[in-house]
Amino acid sequence: MNAPYPTTTLPKPCEQDPESWYAPNVTRERARAMCSGCPVLGACAEYGIARERYGVWGGLTERARERARANKGLTLPLHPRPQNQPKDARLARDLELLHDSEELLGRGVGFEAVAQRLGCSRHGLTSARTRARKHLAEAS
Image (cartoon, rainbow, N blue to C red; front, side, top):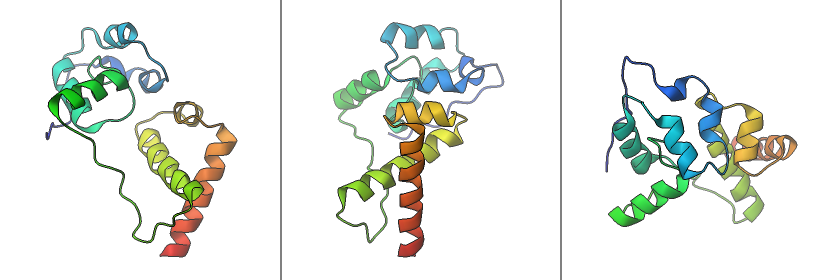
């Protein structure tokens, strides 16, 4: 499934406060309310199902998108990993946190909200990102 990123010249609710779309444990009702009246609701939902692990997309929570993918027989690809990824579980988690945090930060989500969303403290996320970057620099 290759859904394009939903675009419009009309204002979208998610442009007002991007962090609220990535808050943990958003209820189905809250997700629908957040996206109500959006001019690209359907396209956004399809995009979210096809490509997004985190946040509210097209009025769908993370869980709702997981169910939709399962019903359609879809899976999201695993994150790309460096060729020489060590078998160390902590480092594998650090690399995943680095990738996921970069993705969320790139969308305008604040660092505190990213840490909370990924289940870390600010300090824990900073440490994981530092270890991962050090490993990537040494591996190249």
